[in-house]
Image (cartoon, rainbow, N blue to C red; front, side, top):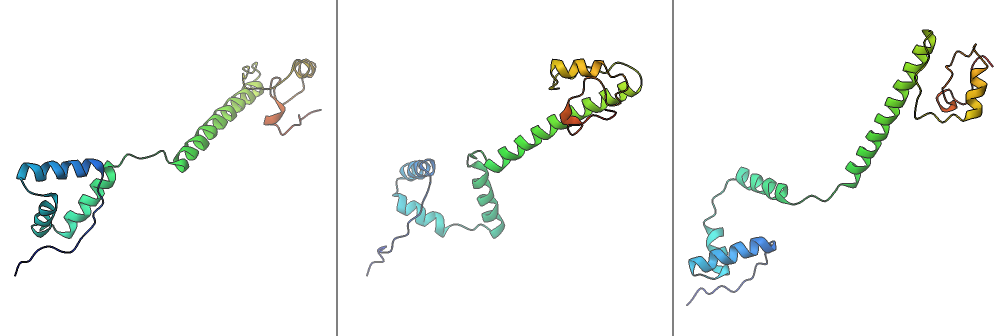
Amino acid sequence: MTNKPSERIVVFVTPAQKLAISKTADALGISVSELMRRAVLNFNATSEQIKVAGIVDRLRVPKAPDALDAALKKVAAKAAMREARDAAADASKRAAQAGRAPQANPASATSGDEIEQDAGHDDDTQGAGEDASLTGGTRSGR
């Protein structure tokens, strides 16, 4: 009576893993099935070793760009730009209150007509070059 293998176990592997397994079997002069049987029967790893091997396998997998991560980076960049713009506006306000001429803000959206109106009003407490988006669309003192 022979104890010939008759049951099948399907194992999915990556192309690189299949190549490595095939080369190992060829180098040992045995079939892939025999190599797998011997490997499993001689496997004495602890559960911690199995967990670590699983983690290492996941770390080796190339990551596709994460849509959530990309969206969060975009939001963070916009927030940083907004904070920089607000800081520049605050600096302009402080300079105007201190009696110095405010720095020109390249991001301001004032037109030539608005600049002329501002030049005629020295009592403006908001600063001559400030755009309406920073003051909610109104100017104080008018």
